[in-house]
Length: 264
Image (tube, rainbow, N blue to C red):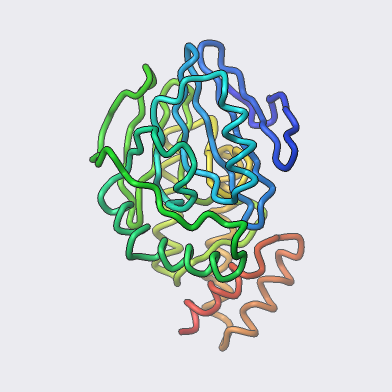
Protein backbone atom coordinates (compact mmCIF):
# COMPACT_ATOMS: atom_id res chain seq x y z
CA UNK A 1 0.00 0.00 0.00
CA UNK A 2 1.30 3.43 -0.95
CA UNK A 3 1.38 6.13 1.73
CA UNK A 4 0.54 9.62 0.44
CA UNK A 5 3.67 10.97 2.14
CA UNK A 6 6.10 8.46 0.62
CA UNK A 7 7.66 10.41 -2.22
CA UNK A 8 10.87 12.05 -3.36
CA UNK A 9 10.83 15.70 -4.39
CA UNK A 10 12.52 17.38 -7.33
CA UNK A 11 12.45 21.19 -7.08
CA UNK A 12 11.88 23.02 -10.36
CA UNK A 13 12.22 26.76 -10.92
CA UNK A 14 8.59 27.54 -10.06
CA UNK A 15 6.89 24.29 -9.15
CA UNK A 16 8.01 20.97 -7.72
CA UNK A 17 7.66 17.33 -8.67
CA UNK A 18 6.73 14.75 -6.05
CA UNK A 19 7.55 11.25 -7.29
CA UNK A 20 5.83 8.11 -5.97
CA UNK A 21 7.62 4.90 -6.94
CA UNK A 22 5.40 1.82 -7.18
CA UNK A 23 8.13 -0.40 -8.63
CA UNK A 24 7.20 -0.98 -12.25
CA UNK A 25 5.25 2.25 -12.45
CA UNK A 26 5.85 5.78 -11.18
CA UNK A 27 3.51 8.66 -10.42
CA UNK A 28 4.96 12.16 -10.81
CA UNK A 29 2.72 14.73 -9.10
CA UNK A 30 3.53 18.22 -10.39
CA UNK A 31 2.70 20.95 -7.92
CA UNK A 32 2.66 24.02 -10.17
CA UNK A 33 2.61 26.73 -7.46
CA UNK A 34 0.52 28.76 -9.88
CA UNK A 35 -2.25 31.21 -8.94
CA UNK A 36 -4.94 28.53 -8.95
CA UNK A 37 -2.95 25.76 -7.20
CA UNK A 38 -3.01 23.39 -10.15
CA UNK A 39 -1.70 19.86 -9.84
CA UNK A 40 -0.81 17.84 -12.96
CA UNK A 41 0.07 14.13 -13.00
CA UNK A 42 2.40 11.90 -15.02
CA UNK A 43 1.94 8.13 -14.90
CA UNK A 44 5.15 6.57 -16.18
CA UNK A 45 5.91 2.96 -17.10
CA UNK A 46 8.82 1.55 -19.14
CA UNK A 47 9.87 4.99 -20.36
CA UNK A 48 6.39 5.81 -21.61
CA UNK A 49 4.13 8.35 -19.96
CA UNK A 50 0.50 9.42 -19.85
CA UNK A 51 -0.37 12.85 -18.49
CA UNK A 52 -3.52 13.69 -16.55
CA UNK A 53 -4.64 17.32 -17.09
CA UNK A 54 -2.54 20.24 -18.30
CA UNK A 55 -0.65 23.14 -16.79
CA UNK A 56 -2.14 26.41 -18.03
CA UNK A 57 0.39 29.12 -17.19
CA UNK A 58 3.15 29.62 -19.76
CA UNK A 59 6.03 29.42 -17.24
CA UNK A 60 4.69 26.11 -15.89
CA UNK A 61 4.21 24.76 -19.41
CA UNK A 62 7.85 25.57 -20.15
CA UNK A 63 9.36 23.87 -17.10
CA UNK A 64 6.99 20.90 -17.29
CA UNK A 65 7.85 20.31 -20.97
CA UNK A 66 11.55 20.35 -20.06
CA UNK A 67 10.95 17.85 -17.24
CA UNK A 68 9.32 15.45 -19.72
CA UNK A 69 12.30 15.39 -22.08
CA UNK A 70 13.43 11.86 -21.17
CA UNK A 71 10.06 10.09 -21.40
CA UNK A 72 7.89 9.36 -24.39
CA UNK A 73 4.48 10.94 -23.83
CA UNK A 74 1.88 8.60 -25.32
CA UNK A 75 -1.23 10.59 -24.50
CA UNK A 76 -2.94 13.11 -22.30
CA UNK A 77 -6.30 13.14 -20.53
CA UNK A 78 -8.06 16.52 -20.56
CA UNK A 79 -10.95 16.33 -18.10
CA UNK A 80 -11.71 19.44 -16.06
CA UNK A 81 -8.85 21.68 -17.24
CA UNK A 82 -9.14 22.42 -20.95
CA UNK A 83 -6.81 25.44 -21.06
CA UNK A 84 -3.08 25.35 -21.75
CA UNK A 85 -3.57 24.21 -25.34
CA UNK A 86 -0.03 25.11 -26.44
CA UNK A 87 1.32 22.37 -24.12
CA UNK A 88 2.38 19.26 -26.09
CA UNK A 89 0.15 20.19 -29.00
CA UNK A 90 1.25 17.13 -31.07
CA UNK A 91 0.40 14.51 -28.41
CA UNK A 92 -2.95 12.61 -28.62
CA UNK A 93 -5.54 14.18 -26.28
CA UNK A 94 -8.30 12.05 -24.75
CA UNK A 95 -11.63 13.30 -23.37
CA UNK A 96 -15.29 12.33 -23.08
CA UNK A 97 -17.82 14.34 -25.09
CA UNK A 98 -19.22 16.01 -21.96
CA UNK A 99 -15.69 17.14 -20.97
CA UNK A 100 -15.25 18.65 -24.45
CA UNK A 101 -18.56 20.50 -24.07
CA UNK A 102 -17.59 21.65 -20.55
CA UNK A 103 -14.40 23.27 -21.89
CA UNK A 104 -15.91 24.67 -25.09
CA UNK A 105 -19.21 26.07 -23.91
CA UNK A 106 -19.94 25.03 -20.32
CA UNK A 107 -18.66 25.81 -16.84
CA UNK A 108 -15.08 25.16 -17.91
CA UNK A 109 -15.25 27.89 -20.55
CA UNK A 110 -16.63 30.36 -17.98
CA UNK A 111 -13.67 29.61 -15.70
CA UNK A 112 -11.14 30.02 -18.51
CA UNK A 113 -12.73 33.38 -19.43
CA UNK A 114 -12.50 34.49 -15.78
CA UNK A 115 -8.85 33.42 -15.51
CA UNK A 116 -8.01 35.20 -18.77
CA UNK A 117 -9.45 38.42 -17.36
CA UNK A 118 -7.70 37.92 -14.02
CA UNK A 119 -4.22 36.88 -15.21
CA UNK A 120 -3.86 38.23 -18.75
CA UNK A 121 -0.91 37.20 -20.91
CA UNK A 122 0.75 34.77 -18.46
CA UNK A 123 -2.26 32.41 -18.75
CA UNK A 124 -2.56 30.14 -21.80
CA UNK A 125 -6.29 30.33 -22.58
CA UNK A 126 -6.14 28.22 -25.74
CA UNK A 127 -8.24 25.07 -25.36
CA UNK A 128 -6.68 21.65 -26.04
CA UNK A 129 -7.88 20.04 -29.27
CA UNK A 130 -9.22 16.58 -28.40
CA UNK A 131 -8.06 13.94 -30.91
CA UNK A 132 -9.68 10.90 -29.24
CA UNK A 133 -13.24 11.05 -27.90
CA UNK A 134 -13.63 8.33 -25.28
CA UNK A 135 -16.49 6.68 -23.40
CA UNK A 136 -16.77 4.93 -20.07
CA UNK A 137 -14.84 1.78 -19.25
CA UNK A 138 -11.32 0.41 -19.55
CA UNK A 139 -8.70 1.54 -22.04
CA UNK A 140 -4.93 1.20 -22.38
CA UNK A 141 -2.50 3.95 -23.36
CA UNK A 142 1.28 3.44 -23.33
CA UNK A 143 0.84 0.01 -21.75
CA UNK A 144 -1.03 1.49 -18.76
CA UNK A 145 -4.66 0.55 -18.04
CA UNK A 146 -7.11 3.33 -17.19
CA UNK A 147 -10.79 3.11 -16.30
CA UNK A 148 -12.94 6.06 -17.31
CA UNK A 149 -15.94 7.05 -15.17
CA UNK A 150 -18.13 9.83 -16.51
CA UNK A 151 -19.17 12.59 -14.10
CA UNK A 152 -21.67 15.45 -14.43
CA UNK A 153 -19.06 17.82 -15.87
CA UNK A 154 -16.30 15.61 -17.27
CA UNK A 155 -14.78 12.31 -16.13
CA UNK A 156 -12.76 10.66 -13.38
CA UNK A 157 -9.93 8.21 -14.06
CA UNK A 158 -9.14 5.04 -12.12
CA UNK A 159 -5.52 3.83 -12.40
CA UNK A 160 -5.76 0.21 -11.20
CA UNK A 161 -2.01 -0.53 -11.20
CA UNK A 162 -1.40 2.08 -8.49
CA UNK A 163 -4.84 1.68 -6.86
CA UNK A 164 -5.60 5.37 -7.36
CA UNK A 165 -8.41 7.51 -8.70
CA UNK A 166 -8.15 10.96 -10.25
CA UNK A 167 -11.07 13.35 -9.68
CA UNK A 168 -11.39 17.11 -9.90
CA UNK A 169 -11.40 18.14 -6.24
CA UNK A 170 -11.20 16.80 -2.71
CA UNK A 171 -9.08 19.08 -0.46
CA UNK A 172 -9.55 17.82 3.10
CA UNK A 173 -8.55 21.14 4.68
CA UNK A 174 -9.92 23.63 2.19
CA UNK A 175 -13.40 24.77 1.24
CA UNK A 176 -15.03 23.40 -1.91
CA UNK A 177 -17.71 24.70 -4.23
CA UNK A 178 -20.86 22.99 -2.94
CA UNK A 179 -23.95 23.86 -4.98
CA UNK A 180 -26.52 23.23 -2.25
CA UNK A 181 -27.59 20.28 -0.06
CA UNK A 182 -28.30 17.89 -2.96
CA UNK A 183 -24.85 18.51 -4.39
CA UNK A 184 -23.33 17.85 -0.94
CA UNK A 185 -25.19 14.51 -0.81
CA UNK A 186 -23.87 13.63 -4.26
CA UNK A 187 -20.29 14.42 -3.18
CA UNK A 188 -20.71 12.33 -0.03
CA UNK A 189 -21.96 9.37 -2.10
CA UNK A 190 -18.94 9.63 -4.42
CA UNK A 191 -16.49 9.77 -1.50
CA UNK A 192 -18.20 6.80 0.19
CA UNK A 193 -17.72 4.95 -3.10
CA UNK A 194 -13.97 5.63 -2.94
CA UNK A 195 -13.86 4.31 0.63
CA UNK A 196 -15.74 1.15 -0.40
CA UNK A 197 -13.29 0.55 -3.24
CA UNK A 198 -10.34 1.14 -0.91
CA UNK A 199 -8.18 3.39 -3.11
CA UNK A 200 -4.70 4.14 -1.73
CA UNK A 201 -4.47 7.57 -3.33
CA UNK A 202 -7.00 10.15 -4.50
CA UNK A 203 -5.46 12.51 -7.06
CA UNK A 204 -7.06 15.88 -7.68
CA UNK A 205 -6.25 18.84 -9.89
CA UNK A 206 -5.93 21.33 -7.01
CA UNK A 207 -4.25 19.42 -4.20
CA UNK A 208 -1.37 17.09 -3.44
CA UNK A 209 -2.37 13.37 -3.45
CA UNK A 210 -4.78 12.48 -0.65
CA UNK A 211 -6.07 9.26 0.90
CA UNK A 212 -9.20 7.69 2.40
CA UNK A 213 -8.67 9.36 5.77
CA UNK A 214 -8.92 12.66 3.89
CA UNK A 215 -12.10 11.45 2.17
CA UNK A 216 -13.65 10.76 5.58
CA UNK A 217 -12.67 14.25 6.84
CA UNK A 218 -14.34 15.74 3.76
CA UNK A 219 -17.53 13.73 4.30
CA UNK A 220 -17.79 15.07 7.87
CA UNK A 221 -17.23 18.62 6.57
CA UNK A 222 -19.98 18.25 3.94
CA UNK A 223 -22.46 16.88 6.51
CA UNK A 224 -21.57 19.77 8.77
CA UNK A 225 -22.14 22.33 5.97
CA UNK A 226 -25.66 20.99 5.47
CA UNK A 227 -26.40 21.25 9.20
CA UNK A 228 -25.04 24.81 9.39
CA UNK A 229 -27.08 25.82 6.33
CA UNK A 230 -30.25 24.35 7.87
CA UNK A 231 -29.75 26.49 10.99
CA UNK A 232 -28.64 29.78 9.41
CA UNK A 233 -31.00 32.33 7.91
CA UNK A 234 -28.65 34.01 5.46
CA UNK A 235 -25.37 33.71 3.57
CA UNK A 236 -23.35 35.92 5.94
CA UNK A 237 -24.44 34.01 9.02
CA UNK A 238 -23.63 30.74 7.26
CA UNK A 239 -20.14 31.89 6.24
CA UNK A 240 -19.37 33.21 9.73
CA UNK A 241 -20.38 29.91 11.33
CA UNK A 242 -18.39 27.81 8.82
CA UNK A 243 -15.31 30.00 9.38
CA UNK A 244 -15.71 29.68 13.13
CA UNK A 245 -15.71 25.88 12.86
CA UNK A 246 -13.00 25.63 10.20
CA UNK A 247 -10.68 28.58 10.90
CA UNK A 248 -7.61 27.01 9.24
CA UNK A 249 -9.32 26.08 5.94
CA UNK A 250 -8.12 27.74 2.75
CA UNK A 251 -10.29 28.57 -0.27
CA UNK A 252 -12.34 31.48 1.03
CA UNK A 253 -13.53 32.27 -2.52
CA UNK A 254 -15.01 28.75 -2.73
CA UNK A 255 -16.87 29.30 0.54
CA UNK A 256 -18.31 32.54 -0.89
CA UNK A 257 -19.56 30.59 -3.93
CA UNK A 258 -21.01 27.83 -1.73
CA UNK A 259 -22.91 30.43 0.32
CA UNK A 260 -24.24 31.88 -2.93
CA UNK A 261 -25.61 28.46 -3.91
CA UNK A 262 -27.17 27.64 -0.53
CA UNK A 263 -28.84 31.06 -0.32
CA UNK A 264 -29.64 31.73 -3.97
